[in-house]
Length: 110
Image (cartoon, rainbow, N blue to C red; front, side, top):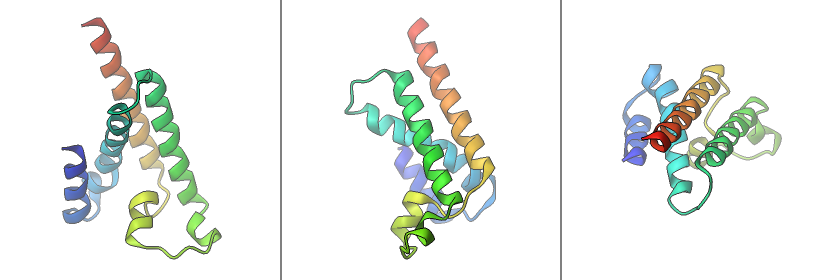
């Protein structure tokens, strides 16, 4: 469901809050639950890993890794690495991480 939502956002929404912020927020959940579906790992550790992975990808955008490595931008590279660095993306990743932590803590005490 999250993957379908990401595809819909990428296909039909051009810019704005939904594409630029909400899409980045949701992608953290997508990656988290993808890994959680086949790894037996602490949910907190996995959430931290996904947060750092998202930060790393965003930082690769900042240094323009494709240009540095002389790799042509394609649909696949844009889907994996995104298109440009944005501090709002970092905020969206952080808020998604905090939401995952809250969900994990809430489920533990329920």
